[in-house]
Image 1 (cartoon, helix red, strand yellow):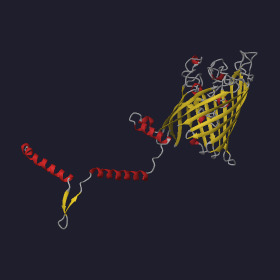
Image 2 (cartoon, helix red, strand yellow):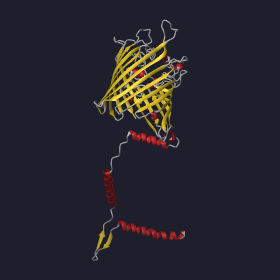
Image 3 (tube, rainbow, N blue to C red):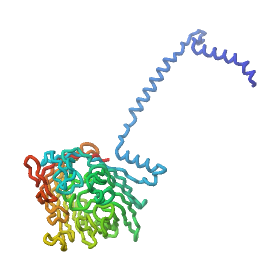
Image 4 (cartoon, rainbow, N blue to C red):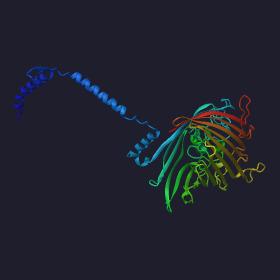
Amino acid sequence: MDGRKVYLLLPFFVAFAIFAGGMLYADVDVVTEGGKVSKVSTVDLAALKAELKREIKAELAAERVAAPPAPAVSESAISSAVSKAMEENGVLGGLFKGVTASGFIDVNYLYNLRNHGEGSGGDRDGSHQGSGRNSNDAINYVGENEDNSFTLENFAMFLDKEATDEHPVGWQMHTYWGEKAQRITFLGPGNDADAADDGAAGENDRFALATANITWNVPIAGRRVPVTVGKMYTWIGYELVENIGNPNYTHGTVYNNAIPFTHTGMSIDVSEFLPSDKWGLTLYYVNGWDSYIDNNETKSYGTYLTWQPNDDFFISLATIWGGEGDSFGSRQENGAATQMYDIVATYSLPQVEKLSLGFNFDWGQTEDQLKDTDDPTGPASTGHWWAAVGYAMYDFTDNQQGAFRYEYFDDSDGAKGFGGSMYTLTYTHNITIAENVLLRPEVRYNKYAIPSTPDSDDYLSPGDKGNTADDEFIIGVGAEYVF
């Protein structure tokens, strides 16, 4: 049909549309049975729409009632979703496949009663004057040593990829931001000798790589042998550098002064060659103590032997030996050896369901450490140190735990640089106040027996208001969120 014929038919289409519209909106006569005529009422479109809306709303409401509530989004679900998104990314998929992301935020407020919050006189060497740090800094602290100050102690971010049978290569990177980042590793980038002065690089650094390493499950003689290379946490001691895993909030004197924190080197786990899975053995070959790079000409060797016959009891023996000497701060061409062993034991009493105990003992020595005061140019003798710690933890309720710690540290020979002894008593009340949130009020007593003459490097200035210099009470509270 050509265009002209279509135009000729348009009037008929218009007439039909007018007729149909009139039939829809006008009254319609209907011949009923018997020949009578009745009228059908006009169709009310507005009423029809309103009725349809009511029916649809009622149906939707019924579906909402019948449907189960939406599940709450958990932390693990979020972490899983993030990990899945990283795995599905075309660029990052290979790198982050199987990686778990976690960490925690740690903030605190500590108050030294000996100083009455006014004794921020700096460290024992005169540094950090007016810094808010505990002026009775007679010993080393990895953290938790501020006085009358709110402190961001640590923001820790962990990325871990476990080495498995299916994927035999894994890796780990743990990073710190905050006060704890300053003292976790002493020797290396930003912490070399030329950066030791106050204000230099490293002294005020608030970021650190606590660990960064690669693990490969090497198949040897039908067994799996995990080999790890890089920077790793120490295998020595009861407490962890991440205090979220410790019974007490503040680190103990023994952790802070008797053992290393980290190592850079390699480890080989040969546990599968032992006769029982109740035993474990790992061998270490590292630069030394708390170093990114080696600061002398020798390496250190270590072992970590564990035995866990059941779920209630655990014991371990850790050792380290190497030519570190001289407080680990200089090259030792004469091979002066530093060695120590560490014993850790834990026991959950079946007789007392909610009570568990912990024990830690350290003994160490450094050759060529002690100079004869009458002949300072002559040969030096060996210096020793030792320490013992006891822990008791009791679960009062599902969300409250009390933790008590007693420790004694003896460095009378000055092998660790302090030349005295000390003991501490600490009580921490751990309260889980919400999911993943931990509140940790604590009281601590430190008793020192170290040189206290004004010309001594370890001089303790007396506190104000007549307080003595050889002991102190510290109160405070830590708040931690785990994600």
